[in-house]
Amino acid sequence: MGDTPRHKVFISYHSADKEFFKKFEGICENSIVNWSVDLGDIPDGTSTERTRQRIRDEYLRDSSVTLVLVGEKTWQRKHVDWEIGSSIRNTEYNPRSGLLGVILPSYPRSKPNEYNPYTIPPRLHYNVENGYALMYNWTDDPTLIQKWIHEAYLRKSKINPDNSYPSFVNNRSGDRWYN
Image (cartoon, rainbow, N blue to C red; front, top):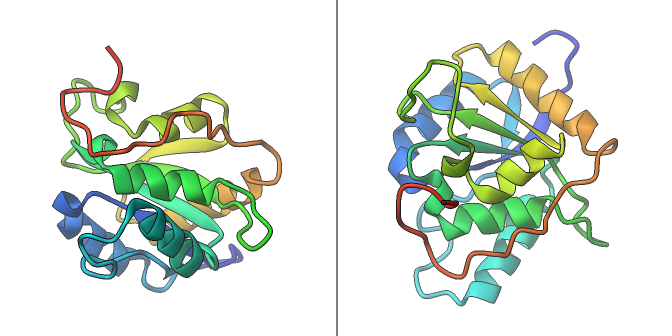
């Protein structure tokens, strides 16, 4: 994959987009080290605080970049919000990660290269707004994805993330997060 370093990447996604996650894993199998939570890794009924702690300590701790696969309803998921929030926090044991979003082919669009900022995870949107994160369109090119990931890795030491959006308590519903 050229001279671009291989990074440990946490992939955040909505379970409804599992097919794209699996495809993405296949595309990037030789260019990233995947540290994502899989369905069933954290049992249903686990408390909110314990879930957040496990995500932070067992999955995010060794990753250097968080990549969010953005489908139609990804913005609604509390776990996606928690994963983004935990990954951009800088703590003694878990340094913050770079952040980027990839718009899935299933994401509804009115124009090919545009997205509605209020239908991507709000915490991701805040970080796109301040330059900490960037959004990209889906590609099957692992070299390009690896370049995006490396750029997110480099940005994390140059720009401070925005983690000010209130943490989700529950999953959300509706067409968008802001009216």
